[in-house]
Structures are given as C-alpha cells and as structure tokens.
Length: 437
Ligand SMILES: *[C@@H]1O[C@H](CO)[C@@H](O)[C@H](O)[C@H]1NC(C)=O
Ligand SMILES: *[C@@H]1O[C@H](CO)[C@@H](O)[C@H](O)[C@H]1NC(C)=O
Image (tube, rainbow, N blue to C red; front, side, top):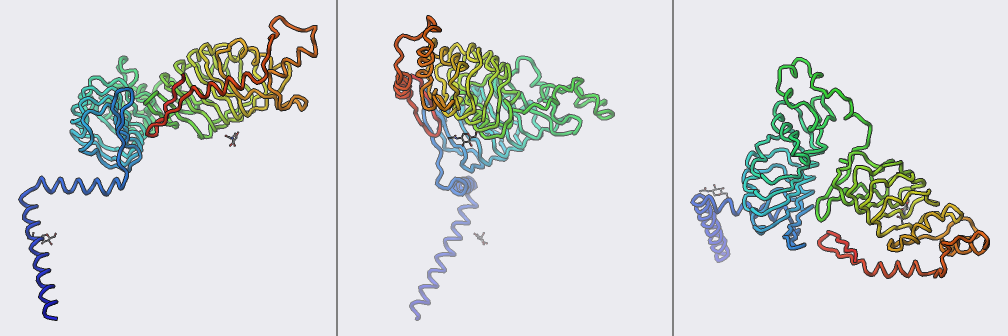
C-alpha cells in the first residue's frame, strides 16, 4: 500500500515537473509554440488525406483538392507550377501565404469559403498567369492585391457575392481595361439591388463612388437591359483550366445549351441534361471547342446549322439520345472531326439516313460507332451500311455511281474496335488524359 502511494506521488511530481518545464520552454520559445500549433492543425484538418504531387508535361502539380484544408501548408515543394486547391475550406488568404512559390503559374482556389484576401496575399507570385477564385464568398476586393502578379492574364471571379459599391471601384476599373479581356469575366454584382446581376465588366466604374450614386442609384445602371437576358448562365457549371479549359455542365437539368460559355473552352460536357433540340448556331461563340459531349439528353432534333463554327471539333458524343437521322448539312462544318459516338439512338433506316451514312463514308478518317437500325421493324438490328446496300440491291435501276463497291458489313465495327485500342486513356491522379493516337 505504502509503496503504491509513493509511486503515485512520484508520478504526480513527474507530471507537474514536466508541466513546469513545458510551460517554461513555451514561454521561452514563441516560435516553437507556433510550429507545434501549426503542425497539430495539419493533422486535425487533413486526416489521412495527403496531397498528391505529380509531374505532367514536365511541370510539377500539387493536387490538394477536396482535402478539407483551411490553410496553405508550409511543406509543399517550392518548385510547383500548378497548385490545385479547389473544393476546400480556406476562408482567408493571408499576407505572404504563397511567397515561397516563386515559379507558380496557376493557382486554383475555386469552391472554397474565401471571404477575405489581405493586400499582400499574392506577394511573390511573379510568374502566376492563372488565378481561379470563382465560387467563393468575396464581397469586395481591391486592385491592390493584383500588383504582385504582373503576368496574370486569366482570372475568374464569378459566383462570388460582389457588393458593387465604392470599395470595388479600383477592381472594376482594372477589369474594364481592354487589355484585361480575360480577367473577371462573368462576375456579377449581388448588391445593391439596382445593380444585381450586372457584370463587373459592364457597370460604370466612375460612378461607384460618385455623388450621383447616392442620390439616384438608377443612374449607374447600364442603359441597355441586355444583362437581363433570361439566358442560362454557364457560371452554374464547373470550370477547370488544366489540363485543358473545360466546362462541366453535366447533370444540371439544362433544357438548352447555356449562354455565356467562355470562348476559350476546349472541352464542353453537356451530358445528362434535357436538351431536346439543338438550334442553329448554338456553339458559334465557342469556336475553340474540341470535345463536345451531348450524351443522354433525349436529343431528337439537330438544326442543320447547329454545329456551324465548330471547325476545330474533334470529338462529338451523341450517344443515348432520341435521334432518328441527321438533316442534310448537320455535319458540314466539322472539318476536323475524328470521333463520332452514335450509340443508343433509335436510328430509322429509310432514305433520310443516307446523308449521315454517306457523309461518314466520304470522311473515312472519322471513327464512329453505334450506327445500327432500330426502326422500322424489318431492318431492326441491321447495321445502317447493310441497310443502304440492300436499298440499292432492291432498286438496281436507281443505282448511283457512288454505290460502294465492296461493302464489308462489319468493317465499321472492326475499325472502331481497332481505333479504341489506339486511344490510350491514362488515368493520373484523378485527371483523365486522353491521348488520341
Ligand atoms: C502551465 O500550463 C498549465 C496548462 O497547460 C496551466 O494550468 C498552468 O497554470 C501553467 N503554469 C504556469 C506556471 O504557467
Ligand atoms: C440514357 O439517357 C436517359 C435519359 O435520356 C437516362 O435516364 C439513362 O440513364 C441514360 N443511359 C445511360 C446508359 O447513360
């Protein structure tokens, strides 16, 4: 019994000793305390979710998306070129937070909770060209924060609750300089009510602080009510800049192709929506587009001029829709098309399918799949090629000179299978890179 009591007493003394020395050492060493605190924060906020670093096309990336981060860690490599911090919980960007990353080219901070950016938060980012701040909680921002990024030429600010008042004047003025044509497009005022939904790019900057504003807020309204178009705004979609500028509007319940698609988008995903028809010139403003996905929309009609202007398009996915044929002309603008997905459509094998079939025959470098008759009953399950051949066999007198001499029924499918093998899909840290061979 005595022995036990003595041991407990000894233990208690040790503990209090330890406490004392710890208190002392803490008092004596502020820096040590800070370090310890920050490392414990790391553990608390990123439980078992380390960030990925990888090299892609000779540039170093840090992928720290969706890690519940609340701050930027001090132990990431200095030579990062791209920092992906989207979908975290960062609330505030503090002075010198990125000062170590002197070669950083892009910084993705979209979909965080950022409401405050200190004036020197971007200090040291001399090489930064791309900064994504969309989908945050910013109400106000001064031009000052951008002076440390002389190379910045791509800035996203939309889907933030911008308060368009005097404090925002310098930013608005900066965004409106003609040379800054890719800075802050699509960002809109949320407050005051008179300016709601007006673009920062378009409001009258010089009146944000003027007397007139106080007397008559109406006067700063843009004369044209143009910004009020009931057009769907593509800012509801998610945008990604790397590896290629992508707008992802998958499953957004869209009934038509969104307006205001940023013109530099290369890849547009509109799959799983309710776009039943494509009207003329739907994609006229996105002429850089290379990949267009319209999979699973219930699409039943495509205007012959719907794809006009898409002269760079390489891949078009129309599978799982309600298409029966293509009107003459639909494919004429697609000079560089390489892949056309046609599966799961109720292709009707009658004379109206010939345009699609012959276009594909004449553009033999376009790989396609899924061109199979679903209607009428007598041709159900036939490949469209077989149907077209039988059409000419039944009516030999109508035989046209373009009648293909040696149709190989399964050739198209074989070709497709071969092509598929040459398309390597490299899955790399969540980024799917498709190399078209
Ligand atoms: C040492 O720290 C503890 C809490 O960790 C505190 O209760 C105690 O008062 C401190 N002692 C001194 C001397 O600062
Ligand atoms: C095909 O599209 C419909 C809606 O049009 C959707 O409900 C279905 O899940 C899609 N099927 C596939 C395999 O994607």
